[in-house]
Image (cartoon, rainbow, N blue to C red; front, side, top):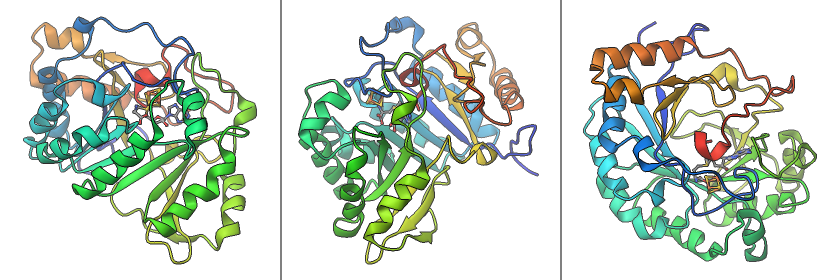
Length: 328
Ligand code: SAM
Ligand code: SF4
């Protein structure tokens, strides 16, 4: 097999880069109610350091990067980072995950910097729910407008990610699904994962099988190909829909077997698995003058340390960082 693969022969070609731990929202499933102690600025990798990591990763056949956070759009100069990443020949897919609040403001600039596509996290279509879910007084309308601007500037496809929670937003599945018919949205329904310090509980967990039952009220879900991106979602289409419905089932269907990724935290730790506390520090070695060859070795070590699967079902949950610090 060519390229990078882990001890379980999974090809690793995808790096998720968290550019900040800061966020303009405090979503109930991601962030503790009082927020998180913020990392000091000098702890956060500079864009040049992120570029150095991405260059070394690209030499190991990583060809996809996604910028995440925290909220990536709160870090200033993000288009500059995208320009740097777009210069790396081997990287042919640059994407972003955002809460969409500032997407309308930046979409055109991000696109011209070299961003190809965007995922927008949106858990409700109702303003009266938007505030309690995000614990901030921003406008749902800004996110909806951001989605339209992103589509109009050609950030294609725009995927909408909804974390489904019983008693909080699970009665909106059909509303989101209807948007795949009427507006060509690509919507992905995500199972709620436990996360350190957050206020959601396992009682709010909705398995994908229950989501599907609800959605089938709108018609048969016909399997379809993922289009761009090869993440853990399984895709379907409702009758007459131009958009798609994806399901991401980290809990009820083990998707670890298809895991192709590494994560870089904002403070420069390579994390082999979202749901394990194991990390390899890159920042200190980078700041002590580590060569590109040395960086490549550390990346290979992180790949070798990827576990076969997560252990949420056995009750193990990483406690070191909330999701907002790992990038989801
Ligand atoms: N702020 C950006 C956003 O919200 O899209 C990027 C960071 S956020 C941590 C990345 C993704 O993680 C989002 O799609 C979010 O819905 C998902 N996420 C966070 N906590 C989660 C949880 N407990 N269960 C499932 N998904 C979660
Ligand atoms: Fe912020 Fe994204 Fe987490 Fe919401 S999901 S608190 S927007 S990082």
